[in-house]
Length: 336
Image 1 (cartoon, rainbow, N blue to C red):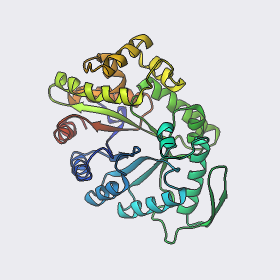
Image 2: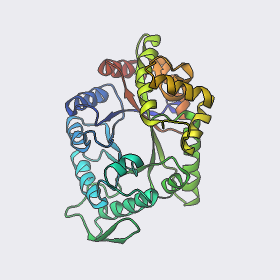
Image 3: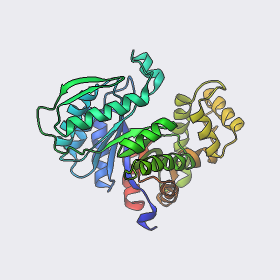
Image 4: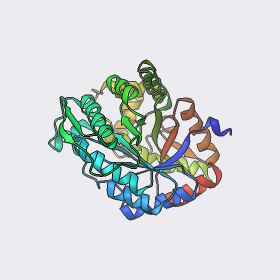
């Protein structure tokens, strides 16, 4: 397949993994020809910056992305300090992702989340100013700094800053101020196409280049495609039950995702109920097509092409299941 028809491939790691295992997987990804290693930081799991630094030190080529940190838990001035250091360590391979975080988790941690998009806008303004070496005084609605300035010269004053967003206001902000958009798991290609279009339109109105799109997707790649598809189902089921609201009242973003998945809402809700009742085979091929990449390497490449057509520049694949090292190596040999 023509390389232009495919996104770049990276892997996604998280605070749910042992840091030493992350280093092992990052090395495997680099050896297999992947372009990037992304870290998802979720509340109450391991913080990922130490692991990202370890992976940066253990590799030489792959980009090291963190998507995303939230400015409530890390003040923007601290984000600037930490990511300037990570960029130094990685010799210019760091990518910063900022998002407001999962609202319910933010409240459990004691942070106010009344103005999430404003908070991200203000955080990016402060971080950018500090990375350029400026003395930043900022009086925002959420954050205030007075003469905040790095005590060293950042390697890249223009270090790429991505945003996580799904709602209209966040997508508009992403197009206006960010270098890229981080699209989360459980986003089907039709939804991604809508998000990418809204971001591109906002960037065009602001006279800015179109932000890059990186998307997280669970993946199992095996020589036996049927085995791969079966292996991804429990991982996908766990994601759906963890991140989908219980009950019938779903936020608009979730309703749109269901519409764009092509799965009727009633059947989607019934599958969720079966999953929560312990039926780990409740997901049929429609769920895999909408929310995962699974099969032989050739099948996975064909599925990845659909994300490229939707506007994705880079797929960060979560190699799920019992043998991620083998799957990464196999995909690198036959799918890259």
